[in-house]
Length: 366
Image 1 (cartoon, rainbow, N blue to C red):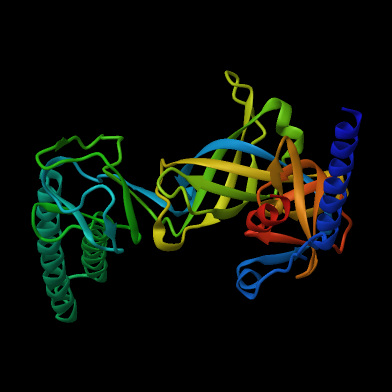
Image 2 (image 1 turned 180 degrees about the vertical axis):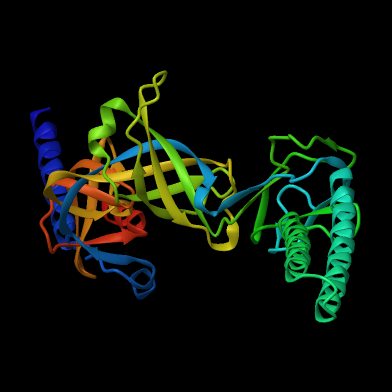
């Protein structure tokens, strides 16, 4: 029995030794080396690299406003006579040229001007005839020089009346008929229309028929809350956006600060003047106005698009070379438009990836 156990032990020992020998014959696999990251030519063409730089620290003020025509380029057209509006040639929003007919009015007052003109012409002809007769009689010694002088004065009075009637015709823009023509005083757009065909106008009408405005340059009137008045200055740059063109930014400057506050809202009105290329901005459009002002001091900035937000932290991709790109955490103070203010984490002069940086970030951090 003991001999049998002894033989089994020897056999087990030799088996273990053989297994150890066989396992030692197979070399252990070498550890795999980590593959170095390198930015491909395709990715190099797709990214954009910007440099961090120090800029003045700014803040912005967002206001609600509306587009207005420049009051210095707006003219209201009033009727100079009463009567019946026979025809209206334009509609709201139409572009008109100076002297273009806006409407025609048949007026008894204009008819009376024609009667006065006819009478004045007849009186002038009679006065001139009497003067010639008086001069002939004076040469024949049949009357005195006093009568010639009196006839001459009658001619002068008749000429003055004819001149007055012509002046009235020019002022009123009437011709030899009972029709009065309303014409555009300047070129521009019809921004207000208060008359239609068939309207009866009184001679003492105090309302304008049309308002013609030039809108190649417009105003934006916006309200500033009382607590923000100290931040607004004349000459500040202003960015304007409208509902009609949400993807387009219009730029102007604060032109005037109105000193009187609205008693109801306690807000101050500011006026922004801006060019209107393509005449896209129309009076009474709503506008969002953004004013930027200096807070004092300076801070390192990068393009706002270069900042990555992930896992409740902010990162930027620091670019040194296509094989040396670092994911670095930064402390973001705020973003203002296309500028991000960085409190800590980056120095001026360091380069960051500002376009397609998410692709690089994912490749490095997955």
